[in-house]
Length: 522
Image (tube, rainbow, N blue to C red; front, side, top):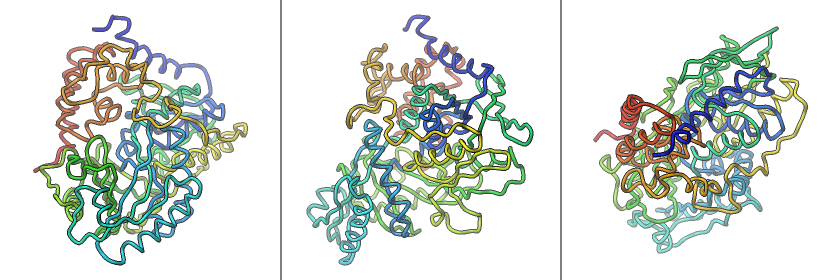
């Protein structure tokens, strides 16, 4: 048990952040949205020396930004579509992230198995172009593999009819942890990042947006915050924020949903990922080693209702399993799924009925007549470029002194000198200094008591879900194990936040209801 003063460090830290909302000041930039784009905008603005506040109505990366396919990549599919500028830009950003966040982004080899004679030369030609677009920033050259080397790289691949494969390189990352690193980088640069703080309205004076009204969701306290410029980076909910300024604003987005399944590592026990280049719906499908398991995905289904906690749609689970079964010697079934999760993509489109897989993964910066800067579209890999473009627009819209972005070579919070298999990076020594550093919260799970305490004290965690879904990723790779861990995580959090037994019970019940949605119906 920690001492009484230490046990409330997390709560005092939260109150200190909220106190800054009551200061009589005008922020240079207020950012709405604590996902990849919003946090990226906040880091970019803070890197230019502006005063910055970024808020999210939920936890950081609660939405799309924790539900990606965990890839930092140029996009082999965009290459096939002929979108070379997007691929080149994404490959350049991949190289930057490998340097700026080596504790969260690492190289990963992909192998495309070939089952027809013409597959290998076609794939090698296309991936050769991928290498060419990467230029000197490439990770390693693609190469053709014979049958034996393909099986060696992909133990568990279906061997019947296999004619070899082609290997290429991209990068893998922890999306929620990268978002958290961005939030902490904002703080390192003097800005303020607040989760569970909802924008209820935009403040307008003389026809210009000049601030936001906020509701701190835990206490219900309201704040009015003045700003020279407001950036709308609310992801799939960006149109809703735009309509706070202009109720008749036309939709910019046609969101789609991508579902993912996680199965045991035994289905694909090697260290390489498997890429299925053509699925029945015209997408690609990935099978990726992740968190000691295998991540399978993804789908692309229109999703106009925009739930905060999206669930896989009917047929998405079966589609992924059926596609995976064609390429694995041991086909996974519903019984084998440890967790299923879905995320919403903020695709730019006009709602003309086009399949969402054909909609743009590029981004759009829009400035309304009242000066609201909205950044829409994009993907995790290009978040930094998106943020730079949005803050460039915000400079003009808010009358800020022109300053250039400093993020291209900005190492993110916790970044060690080189790649390290530890998401805490340089913060690991601080984690280990806390009580419970050697005690796992539940048998068979790497999460320690110290890591839960650190999540509350230094990583903005307020709920059991914050810890088990995003500070640690167990909900996403083993929902049953996450449910087992919830009571102990609630107990530790209650100590850190100064919360009651009733809070603990309510938190466990709430988390169990969420976690149940990550389990597949048999």
